[in-house]
Amino acid sequence: MSCWIPRILILPFFCAVAVAQTPDPGKTFKLLVVHVKGLQHLSESQVIAATGLKAGQVAGEQEFKLAAQKLAETGVFTELTYSYEYSPAGCNLEFRVAEDNNQVPIIFENFVWFSDDQLLNLLRTRVSLFDGKVPTGGNLTERLAHALTSILNERNIPGEVEYLPFAPENEPIQAYDYKVKFHPVLVRNMEFPGATPEDLPLLLAAAKQLAGQEYVRTNLRAQERLNLLPVYHSRGYLKAEFAEAQAKVANDGAQTLVDVSFPVTRGIQYKLSDLQFAGNTAFPAGKLRDLVHLKPGEPANSVQLAEDIRQIQKLYGTKGYLFAHVEPVPNMDDSKAMVAYQLNVVENDLYHMGDLSIDGIPAENASRMVAQWQMKKGDPFDSSYLQRFFSILYRDFGLRKSYDVDPKQAINQQEKTVSVSLHFVPRS
Image (tube, rainbow, N blue to C red; front, side, top):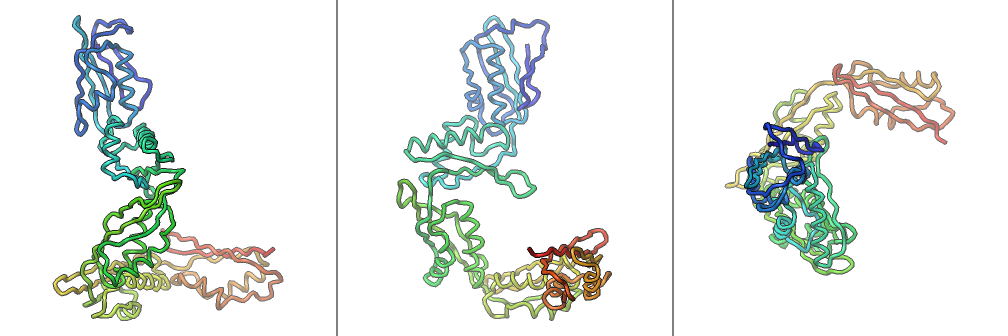
């Protein structure tokens, strides 16, 4: 007799007869051997242990179904079938599986009492079929949370464990974040191994806001990128990098205080050798260069360059190039500690003024306002005009009430136009 499960997570499991003679569904056998075929990463012994079946035990159809269901519910397999052969001596059982190769890592956000390796090893011994990563479906993620809570309890660490999937907007899940809740883990002090005496006060000032804040690893990575790396990039250390931040428990009790170490390697300080533009047609290179603060021979301040690029993109917006962007391409010469930048401009499409609509005020006043509006239909759209209109050009021409204005811009990607609507709301 053979029995199969069409696909994991499709419950209940369905069986069909594949031989002429069928044993009584309630019949049991001595289990002679269990095999698992199709494995790539997991071992056969791991999977057999997860079924709960052992050679030598007496089992039958119900036990085989239950074992298959336990495997399926983990989410570790994308395909799972089983078959068995019986004889007067007993039964041979075989599972055929396909492993989920799209499993994702897990992140321990604030388990400061353990290293990652310690936790992973503990979880491997407690959660069957866990081998460092988890599928995005099934119950393995929940079982890990229960196991982590038990580990905390054994160490007399109060708190419970929650987990959340991490996925950028409109993208698949990339990881699962596990965090201890109901027990504060707070940052006490920060240290910066590898920093020079010159760097240290700047880093401490940039990290000052972290003191007293909740310790969360992913937040610290964001702080490194947003606040700490600019300390170096603004002075030309373009290859500076921080290793994984490390937390050391300083005080444990109702709340846990940790000292956080941010190992840093600052590398070479680069100076600017040259800066060129490419791809620009709407503006001459000289006009764009005037917006860049970097000077040849000075430290290559990439933080300032990023701000200058934003200003260049705003300038393009005033001429209708609403989606223009500039990509800086550095060419570093480590032997001379110099860097040359090429700023590649992608101007994209030119957008024009579409329709102007005004509502919420008397028609006479709306007509006068339309006459004031100097950006006419068909003109290149100026992304700065709306603000200038209300700060410089606008006159209410005798409106008897005070109004708030709700301006909206509607971009038509096909026609390459921008229509503006001004909705006036009387102030209460």
